[in-house]
Image (cartoon, rainbow, N blue to C red):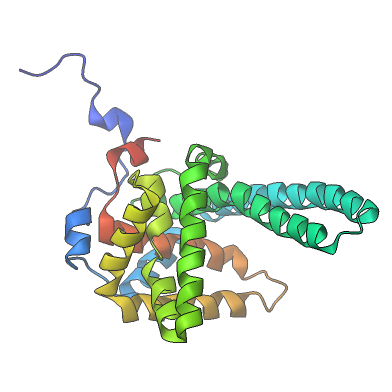
Length: 251
């Protein structure tokens, strides 16, 4: 018997949202997902149309907050440095500032990533989404630290393991946010999934770095197009691998 009080799905998710048969966690870990560099970039480029302003606002909010934090913490550290003769304490404070900036910035970075994820299925996005994920600040920070440490160890032991892990953990952060996974669970899910298409993901990563670098040359104007392109391409990859939760689309 149907529930007369059940909220219709059409009220939660826009009718314009694409509801194709995308990935899932089980399929992703088994390597059963579609991935083509050409198709990802082509679709991402099409979806930049009509979304650039939202992304630019999101990046503007992000840089505004980060610059404010850096200025504020620099004033504090500057005062400590001025009265302290302990070099080790000064170095510790500088490292602490860097971690503090990353701690605040990571949820906002994930906001831009989730804009790309939602845009991948034509769900509505806004620049204010960069503030939506501070509830995940602790698991995101733990995930970031674990990835840094493990990748660093990989580079110290031998360069290739470090490169492998850097790409293999590429999807860990959005899995924490979008699937609600624990840091280690997200890292392992990302690693097992990407390993099936590691060289393709690595090639797309390098290609996007090249595209972003070239787009910075003419006064950075090209970033108006390439930053949204990069975020949407990332979102399409995530969508094809893991699918997107209805709750994410309803946000």
